[in-house]
Image (cartoon, rainbow, N blue to C red; front, side):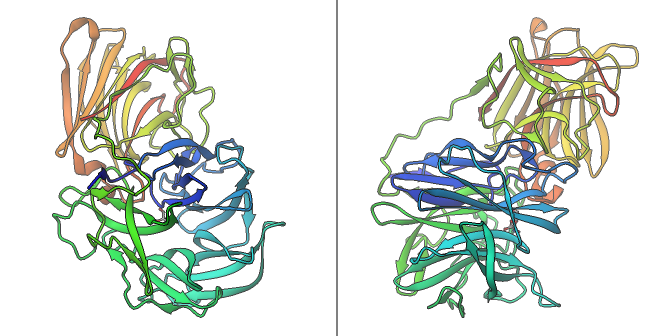
Amino acid sequence: MPTFRNPVLPGCHPDPSICRVGADFYLVTSSFAYYPGLPLFHSRDLVRWRQLTHVLNRPGQLPLHGLDVSDGVWAPTIRHHDGTFYVVSTLAVDRRGSLTFVVTATDPAGPWSDPVPLEAEGIDPSLFFDDDGRCWFTACRDAPGDGGPGELWMRELDLDRLRLVGPTHVLWHGAVRGAWVEAPHLYKRDGVYHLIAAEGGTERNHSVTAARSDAVTGPYVTDPRSPLLTHRHRGPDEPVHNVGHVDLVDTPDGETWAVTLGVRPIEGTHTLGREVFLVPVDWTAHGPVFAPETGGVRLTERLPRLASARPEEAVPAVRTRFAGTPLGLEWNSLRGPVTGLVEPAAGGLEITVAPEPLGSTGVPAFVGRRQQHVRFQARAEIGFAAAHPSEEAGLAVFQSQDQHATLALTVDGAGTPQAVLTVREAGTSTRLAAVPLPPGEVQLAVEADEAGYTFRARHPGTGGWTDLGTVERAFFSTERAGGFVGVHLGLYATGNGRTGTGRAIVRWFDYQPG
Ligand code: 6LW
């Protein structure tokens, strides 16, 4: 039986939502405080995905300044109706206040409209187009009073005015009241409306639950088979955990597949964030049955019928040469564009020393790409002459503004160039090692495996690598840092509060899955 490897989108891509138009599938995921926001991917076979664009890629569309990296743009839904693509999502601020919005486009590659705010409480918005063309908006909020977390509600969306209209319908409080029912999506099958949701929180108790109704506005009755999909009862040997937050799509030849988020923990912790897994679904008279043959989310899964089997290829190393070409879609900055701070120039990527440190909630001179494999090697060749010991430029393993490690080129008090390894946790920075280096271009490397991240530096003219130390893998885990994101590998420069004049030039950056 031909198979494929899950996850289909490795690295931090949580809260997947999917739709199909003809032979084309489109998928969006959360982007938190990273900029641009809402990566959008295309596929023809559900297995191989290519990023097309970001839905929010213009400055000013996204007020992310001051946010924790795990706040920002959460849990989008993508749908297509009558020639228009719709994405609804929420800007979560301080994990409490939030602003829900809708954006539209006729071409998923863009341009997308500016966000139109919707008067909607809560998070995880979704849209359902009924047979009569009416559009129903659903989302999740806290139940009023002391009703506990998790109330799914609905209003109609007026598609001409992009405004919520008519009464609010309270749909469901989950299979277990108070267990954080969220991420609702509605589907209609054989005249029955199926409300499929996530329950138990996005960590180890995550699960897929469902309710059904004969009318779109309810009443919804809990599907007694709930949970329909979960790995919460599985032990530590289970390779995939935290599964839930599904969205379903039908293929042109009549199969149904779900995209779900999940994580791949090692000894109880994961660093890659919540990734996208593909799961087969059978529709029965009782509703959807997830993973009917295996009962769970598998690293190796049977191919969708529409996909053709291909020999498994080793993932090639990616060398980014920067010189003169715009940064690829895999590169993100924090909380806003870094125009003027990080610029591809003829000699490489120029990163200007700006006051903002990585530990701030502003826009540092930083660009990063997701860590997508537990084992990888990242290397960069960087030229940088610090004018002051507070100036630094180099490589960052970035979990959050409060939890990261840097391998930086700087100078000591006497002006001698050196490479310094620093870890930052819960707002405190600790210098782990420093080695002097001859001036000039230097190569910096980080190599990771199941045990830890090892940092090395070398002067290409003088040969061998010098080890600066290893940081245990769990240091960068979501379990240790809290929040909702996985690791980014970044290039940065900062004056740590001082305005600098210098620039780092990154000649190239390699990412080699190991
Ligand atoms: C997402 C929600 C969740 O909106 O995490 O805990 C949020 N659950 O479904 C961010 O990914």
